[in-house]
Picture (cartoon, rainbow, N blue to C red):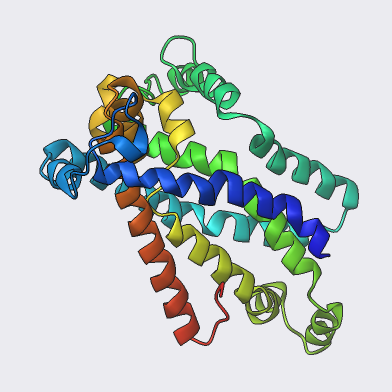
Length: 288
């Protein structure tokens, strides 16, 4: 069993823990030629500068707002979907629904973004063609700043909820069928069985996934936004990750990008610890 853990441990050591050494450039005036060790130390200079920028306040608010919308509207979706799928009796129909639900998760954002353009664009988009034919109007899903943020949220939910659904289905499979049989004998309706048996039995899984989601609150989905956004919607869609990409890679200000990324990681870590402590105070196991 311990040998099976080695590939996973190596992955995290190489790609997650070892790169933490590079975070020191957030406190240095980093030059590629000089390297990390020989670059001059500047302390919190870059942090003070980015916190004074109006642009940083905007991307911070965008990141937080998009993440909260995804959490509020997206977190219940896989729970509801897994319960509905668990109630399907016909196995062939259930497998078909599972395939439809899981498929978007295995499609890269590059391909999925192209599909969304074909679906939502004003020029020949399937959705807007239907809207024009039925109600006589169109919606600028990808260009209107007032609509684009909502488009980001519901497309992210559509793309990612299938993976969480798998986890909840696995948790549902561990519920003792005798509990449902006893409830049926006692006259419990299907709704009563869901609220009195199903949800309480998977509450631990729900809490763990909720803690992990809260711990990643400052990660609003770089791949999706990077593929779908454009300067016309920067005001509502530019997040910390895309901001770090622009100032770090395209402008070459690596120390500033590292400072912004380190700030985001510290916030995520704080949220994770806080959410776990709150969960444990309510009697849940948490993640540690």
